[in-house]
Length: 87
Image 1: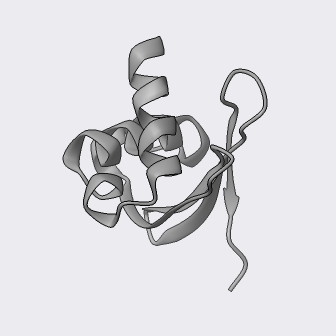
Image 2: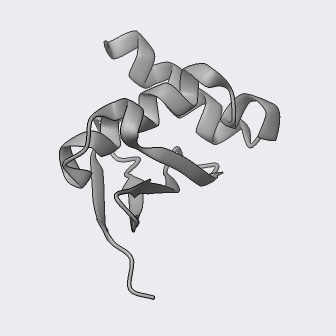
């Protein structure tokens, strides 16, 4: 699990669109988002994945017609959060 988190950090930091949108990364973001959206990982649709050079990143998770803005912090162990985006 730690290896996958490090891979996700690497991909978000790399800024490479092809890697950020890879199935492995999208699956990880679906899983990370699931606890916040209340949906199973496969029910989350991930879009707008953005990585920063400091290791942080943001993405949108859509579940049951609700869009969530999710983020990953960069200090220490990665921390994740999602909240319903206000339209």
